[in-house]
Length: 145
Image (cartoon, rainbow, N blue to C red):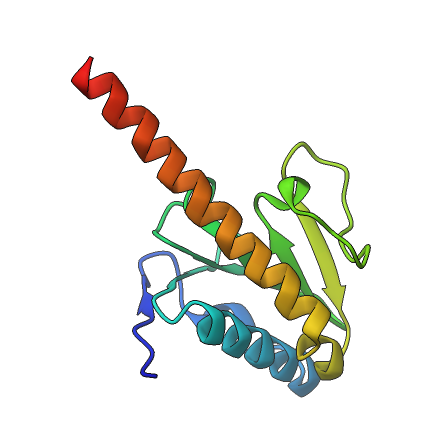
């Protein structure tokens, strides 16, 4: 299966976000990026140097179209979910108390490659797909009325 990733670079680049990080942090980020692309080959990747993060989603808009982001830290990568509060979290991986945002602190490649992270990512992709379809349906009903 070929990847059709679209990368929007007007806000930054992957290297601009992860370029100066340790080899360990880069390796974790690369594994998480590969997971996203494996689950959603048509993902839209938006590196945002100002946010110090790379967002992934169905479009460029991080707050509505994105489902996750990767944010490098000194010793880990935060895998954030824009709509994480709406996700079922059977493995109790998600941290955070905001209205929508949740994250997982990924300290190693084994965790980045784990089935638990893949399951959470899959749920996040489906949540955003369903959320965007519902929003489009609602908008279409208003246009017809």
